[in-house]
Image (tube, rainbow, N blue to C red):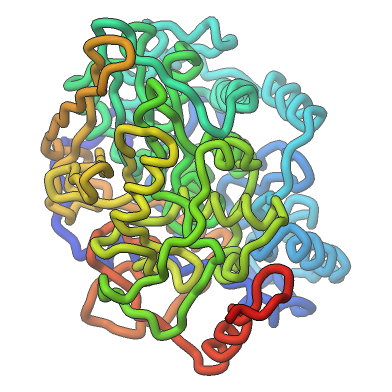
Length: 571
């Protein structure tokens, strides 16, 4: 998107395209499909190929391999890194498959790209970063080369250097297609990690007296629409707190610019800028929906590893004046976690609400979890006393679930199994149990940018004309409180999409598919005419995947739920 003169192309709305063009360029990670490759060569010949247009971080050589971060060293940001095997099915599986890969003898390759040392093969990191590893990453970043002499943007020298002038300059260069130096981007993300690690899973937010709180929904890398939102809402400050309610990145092709702007706001006003984790602040979705490829194209995979670490440390929700709960997806699912094979999306066909978690239980969740593809079906089962099991279930629900019209719980339109929709009775019971006024969430496209899905459940979505084809408005919320303890007033502000450079959604996903093809698995289309997102992440309400039920599985679940957690038969 950037010419040799550093200018962006003529502003124009991207040409219309089908949703399939943008949603179906990669398929879900499938560990089972990858397992047969273990023991075979995982390093096929890589021939030079044309790369998508790329914005370079000033002062960073695009052909230079990224510095190692943590256990896995980052591969080259570009230039034919031979693929390794992603094991996204769990930490244990990842360790086992990685060990198998390391035991394989290195083979020579034909072609112009030489085989890199095996320790240079990049694969996503699932384990947490120790304090020592973060310090080592900081030392490496500090030793990186600075920008070239013609760089005119801001320089990052710690959180105190992020001022209003810094942010003005950052926004200005990004609008010109210029990125911050790689060294500065690394150090900014590392400082955000340090800040987020000090925060609670459920944060508390106050509305300044006589002022308002702004709540922003999904942005999805739509930088130009984000800039328009800031013109309408103003920028975060100590007098104007913001809650960014997840899904900052993916889909849109300016996710790096969006997240760097949000992180700058967080570093400038850490006590007044609040970030919730969404389902697109996850490793799996970032690999599939563009952010991984964008970071790899514009910077390198080492920085992507640090972004993933920052995302794992994001809070799950925030409580505004102890009255309004703000979270990305939805409420805790059924307990026991029943999944009834053959259940339909008919509102009268429901799993009844039995036990419902409260806010105190959510506060105790260890949010530092990377949900892998096998976690969703494996979350189904009887009630459990195991904290790890319950934490993962709660995380899946908060990041992924959606409201439904009928009472109780039903199967979600997203994913195959293990993600639920919750009814108005669930919302009402949760609000009553926790003495709340209402719940604000995001996660779904709404034609007007917002919608009261239940009498006390409001959805806000801030990415207008989503995927350049949604034809929806964007919206943000302004919350005010007349006096301490009084109900909170909610004002919705709607807006249309603005022009942006002619770059389609998910443009940078090609970087992953070309350089790391092992990270994606091509899925055959079951139905060619519906145009829904077949990878389990449709944000469009009312669009669904076909349910897949297996008779043997149905019998197994019927047997499982004849007994309680103590093995006593349920009469």
